[in-house]
Length: 505
Ligand code: NAD
Image (cartoon, rainbow, N blue to C red; front, side):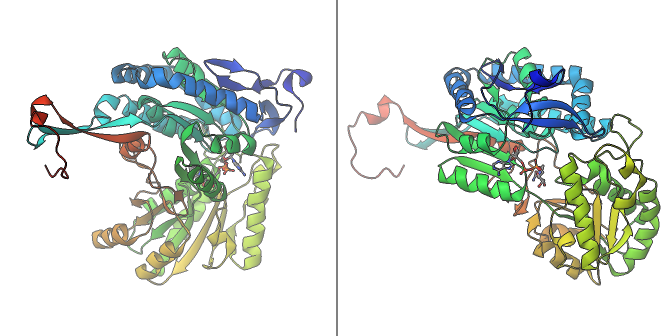
């Protein structure tokens, strides 16, 4: 573990945010945060103790009665103001993402936009949270339903979208009248405090939004705390399973979004220029560190050769370098450890017998000091190979060749993950069959990264999502509220006196 910042020099320390202010922890554990394009330490983050988590949850619990009873219009107005403030500070937030994560500035800005759209959606909460009403369900009897906040909610988020993924959670949770504790990734933690500052400036009362930094110690404290009513998790599948199991056993509502291996199926009639452009962006953008990145290409029939003819020159021409230069298209990986893990997968794929058409291990960018790896392309991979089966989460595309469309569908459906997928074709009938029969939660038709907009909901199938509900959109409103249904009758209806038989209306 790192030394504490004050002892080292000018490097900033990322702390907790509890009850409306930065709170120093008593923890003696800190982790280093790196500028992934230079490999230099740029910050350090506290690894919160159980006492820190307890304080954050206590603050959220104390703020709950006041916030949950605050008028829905006032809650919406905080979101309107937050939207304005994010727009004001957008460039600063993008630079923070790029420094700690590595993705190119324009890509970081795009991720802010996608998060901002959830804030915009949350501005409509008075309409979204409306209940239903029936009058006269029986003589003189009315029934209405309302959606009430669930209580103190927690969000646990991954490194790859330090701004966007928290924004998938807290705007709706808070707009629905809950209070919130965020545990961001320890690898790029700084955005979390920016959200805390902006929410405070937007008028959110102290305690409604809290941040605890840290690792599994903080996560497990959250999962085992009986004051937490609902947990939203986004991260790798093994951790998602742990979070889902523990939170469920402890009686919490939980949505846990996990890892992915997203297939792009290319039919022989596809527009190959379009498919190649889609693959270059969806495979190597953000250095492949997106849960909706395309990592497996399925070439059907004789589509492989024309596709490669278009794609390989584009891979050669990829501009790789620091994310701070907006001319670049791909930045570094998050940490040295993760880069080495991805590089190891390239060794594995080669040993398994997949053909390395482009080798990221030998790209000249690997001589730079940051955590860079060049793009890699495997051809002739087989279904049982680890480079096909496992999530690599780096700039590696793995192509499998199949004879028929049916084989392609079977391949995708047999994969353990089911987050996103896409088909590229000019045939409407094939596209329709694909959309209907594919066992994946988010499907693109000639669209490589089909991330649903904020007014739809995001979520995979199979081992890409544990829990019943997808995230944001109306699913988010349902997740962060409990349904209450009231049946009412006013005094004229009971004038006759008590009734002892089962009411049948
Ligand atoms: P991760 O699972 O390592 O970490 C996610 C969060 O869990 C972090 O806050 C981390 O501190 C915490 N954590 C890590 N290990 C833990 C443990 N043993 N016990 C308790 N908590 C623990 O994921 P990551 O490396 O930060 O992010 C990349 C992963 O996230 C990829 O698998 C990617 O596919 C996935 N992801 C999925 C989606 C989606 O929507 N399905 C979106 C983004 C990222």
